[in-house]
Amino acid sequence: MTKEENVKKPKAQRGPIDLTFLILVLLLLTIGLVMLFSASYANAYYIMGDSFHYISRQLVFAVVGVAAMIAVSYFDYHILHHFAYLLMGVSIVLLIVVFAMPTINDAHRWIFIGPINFQPSEIAKFAVVVLFSHWISIHYKKMDTFQYGVLPFCIVLGILAVLLILEPHLSGTILIVGLGAVMMVVGGTKLTWLVGGGLAGVIGGPLLVLALGKWDRAMGRIEHWLNPFLDPRGDGFQTLQSLYAIGSGGLMGAGIGNSRQKYLFLPEPQNDFIFAIVCEELGFIGAALIIILFALLIWRGYVIALRAKDRFGTLIAVGLTTQIGLQTILNIAVVTNTIPNTGIGLPFFSYGGTSLLMLLGQMGVILAISRQSNLEKE
Image (tube, rainbow, N blue to C red; front, side, top):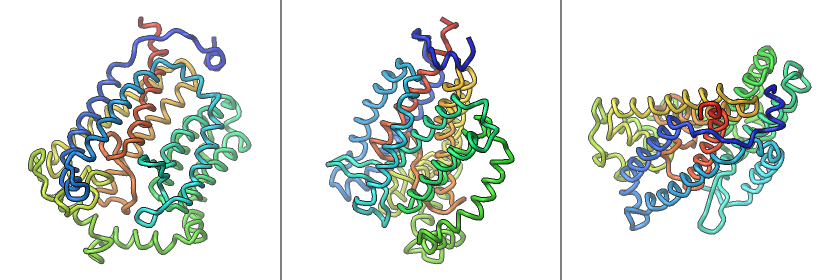
């Protein structure tokens, strides 16, 4: 049976779970929860009057998320073929609805439903992976043509990019476009098309930002990235406090719970800049070990992708693993001021219950792929 026949007629049997991948996920999640509590309790007490405000909610979502991850690992991932267009349609609708919601820090990124809030961009990432995997697995023999290997993917990425820039959500735009490009490469799109698309993006990207009225905001971010001391009490404040935290950590760190920057110096230490607190409390060695754990998780995700029994499974695993990798790289790059400051969380560490729940659910999809690829090992 060929790989494509296996996509159309999936086996019902399931093999053992990939234990290495599961352990790495649980290890990162555990360390993330410990660091979240350490980074957040001062802010939680000052703002909410309860030191356990953030960690108690994150723990609930973590427990539910782990249960969902295990449950999803028993599902046949081929069912995602039937939801590819629906997921993308819902994502686009939600990215439009977000403009009717209140702003936070002058950005329309969140949808509020009672006490729950979430970013539609989280759903859009998953939708891109599923839809692109669906298209590529069906048209893989035609992926070297413009009609099948370039045009539909660029249309989807273009729509998402416009909506995300309007929010504005630069890091989300970079992540989704980068994720789509990686999947196109893996799917068989000609490199000449991708190089041409990259050059068009370099030229057209700034023009699109200008046309959408976000030029001044983007240039302001770049100016304060190049020199945070231009406005040390304003736009450069968070970056400077992050660098102070990283620098004060030294080689061994101050120890868990002993950060000084989290005491109302570094804004929102439980969210996008939690890695700065990790560096301050665990030092260079601790931060390096966490980066190694992320690298091992990404490596294992690609191993599962290579062992998948069909093209759809390979593409899904590559996409979801690449998402983790790109998001981790972008977050650490922002925290260390390697790239301009944009809002993007560190997987398994940053506060956000719904995003954590979705992330763990996606890890369950990778585990589901590993179950079918491990059938012959039973």
